[in-house]
Length: 107
Image 1 (cartoon, rainbow, N blue to C red):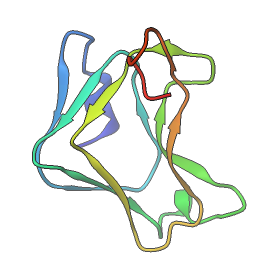
Image 2 (image 1 turned 180 degrees about the vertical axis):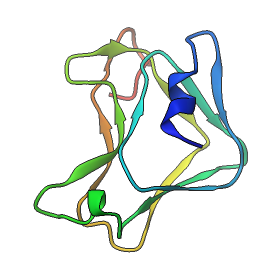
Image 3 (image 1 turned 30 degrees about the vertical axis):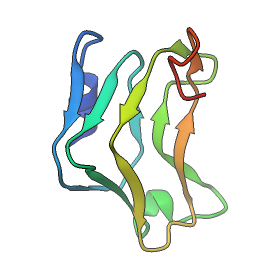
Image 4 (image 1 turned 180 degrees about the horizontal axis):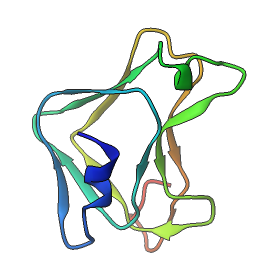
């Protein structure tokens, strides 16, 4: 599973995440206007030893939804986000997308 997969999903499709464990060593940008659904709770595991997520003085998002000021409808369900070891420089989820309509986004 890689960031390119999410970028290939169009607004009329669902990003289906197969059951499994996916190790994340750099920020993944989640595109706007998509739906993500996991199969039997797949795990996205942020690698704490990654240079991206090990500096507590310069934390980085592991997952970023949109950019500040974006309006969007983004849905995620049945997915688990966790770390592998200490990830003192990780912001697990940076959610920038404001809602278009009530309930259309997590912010």
